[in-house]
Amino acid sequence: MTKLKLTNYVDLEKAREGLLRDEEVRRVELEALVDTGASTIFLPEDVFEALGLRRIRDTPVFLADGRSIACAWTSPVEIELLGRQAVLQALVGPRGARALLGQIPLEQMDLVVEPGTGRVRTNPEHPDGPIMDLLSA
Image (cartoon, rainbow, N blue to C red; front, side):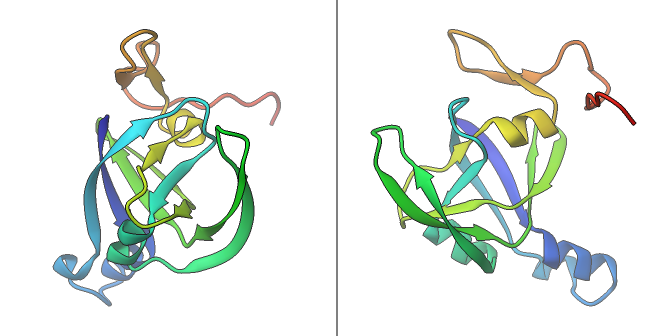
């Protein structure tokens, strides 16, 4: 399990514009299972509500046991882990479900998972911050 800091990104932008006080920005810290087989971040309904996120649209999601369920994509959430941040939409699951951290946010923050231990750490090849790969620009 890995401790994440989550912030409602719309609130954060409003605070930057002076429309909200910093203490009004909705934030949550939680333990998430790092799941390299998952695509993105998966949040339980209660965390979604605590952050005040909006549902954008529903999408089918395939679970590890082969079942398919409908989950909602959220408005943007900022994820912070090991001093690195990513802003993306999350998927919302049932209340009380385990939060998952998948490959897309790990890649965006340039974090690696140690085989065997499952420990998340910054990419040793890029200790000063994330570096993204592009095939062409």
